[in-house]
Length: 99
Image (cartoon, rainbow, N blue to C red; front, side, top):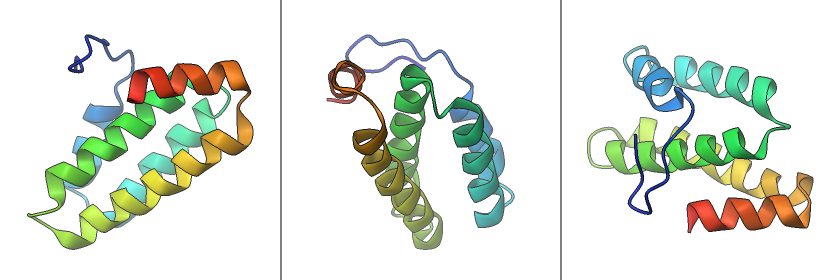
């Protein structure tokens, strides 16, 4: 997956969540929990996780409100977590890629 700004995704998060989508809300939450736990100290991967969560909100918002809401809740939780747990340089990277 390549973003409009030319950023090339390094992770398989999009594919992981696409698989989870077919198994429902609990699978989505489980996929998030595993990805977060594994990569919570890596600003690049956490940034990609935020991007995927955001795109999944838009993918589902007209198709399945429950799934879209789960993605939105996870997105907001992680976005807030980034600003509480990363240093200024890491946050600048996050903002540059997600803007």
